[in-house]
Image 1 (spheres, rainbow, N blue to C red):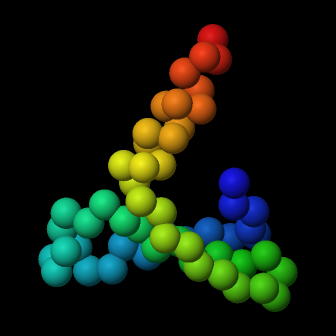
Image 2 (spheres, helix red, strand yellow):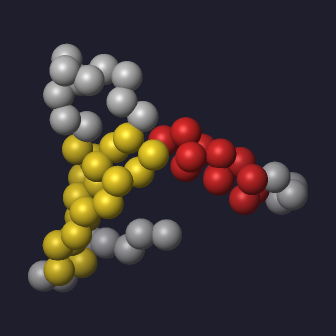
Length: 55
């Protein structure tokens, strides 16, 4: 889980890399700035597994 006051996706230039499966997230919480890379296929897989048994 990511906590932040603001989160902005940074997908770069899709004309240069249209099939990228990774998104860079930039955010801040107060004065602390951070960035993280999110692999979309892995994120979807983990989400499906996490909610598989929830009904």
